Amino acid sequence: MPPSIRKLTGRIGALVEGVDLTAPPDPSTVTTLRHALNEHKAIVLDTVNLDNAGQERVAGWFGDLTTAHPNVPAADGTTNVLAVDSETSKANEWHTDVTFVVNPPQVTTLRSIVTTPYGGETLIANAAAAYRDLPEPLRALADSLRVVHTNQYDYARPSATSALREEYDRVFVSTPYETEHPLVRVHPLTGERGLFIGGFAKRIVGLPSSESADLLRIFQSYVIRPENILRWTWSPDQLLIFDNRITQHYAVDNYDNHPRRLNRVTVAGDVPVGVDGRRSEPLVGDASHYSSVLEVAA
Picture 1 (cartoon, rainbow, N blue to C red):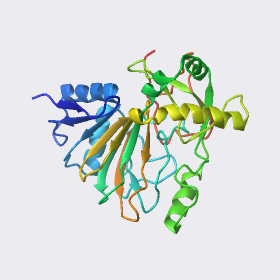
Picture 2: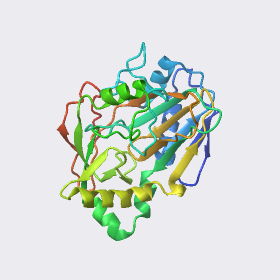
Picture 3: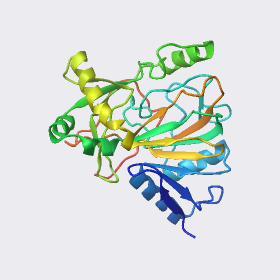
Picture 4: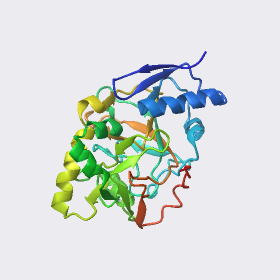
């Protein structure tokens, strides 16, 4: 039986059923998952029965893995798993993963380990739908702009509330990275254009900081329109896979002090390309220890 795919919202998200992630990968199943990811941007699988090694193996169906993070150490006993743990961080701001390096991950996988009795949802936004929603004059402007992204920005919260979180923040920014990306990225598999911004976007090239902030706020407002968002409520032992090239996400801090943990494994990506064909350019920092570069045919 081929996997069944059921849309979760009109613009983003699908539930995939009928896939045994513990079995050796069948090429047709992997192709089905990739096509579902291209179309729906985020897919969810329930009762996956995976440990860390299993999550790494499934993420590997989509390509070579990155290490856990350019600066933050991997979860104990692993190389590729980042613990997204409420004890150390609460990433309650819209972002795309690791856009401060020249080739951010193409795919992110999140597996639920400890879930909350209420709240704790993950929001995923469709950046391609946001681009399509732009009025033509804003679209033309966006096509022409470049943006500097950096990790020298506490995207997680305005102030640390514990020693563990202070240490996490210190490590997160310990080695600085900056990259210049196109504001509009062309997806290498689908050809779709998406707004490539989010919490690590610092400034628009060639503009003063105040104008940069104003324009980024306008473009971001299209990404986070409610109709572009999947709001996923976690249960234990689920796997959420999203296309990091053309989405943003947000972990909602609405669960009081209950523990929450997801394990993240990401897949090495290509260097983004803008509408004009220009590739992203690294400005500060060498992240080659973190990720190989996926070469995509022109």
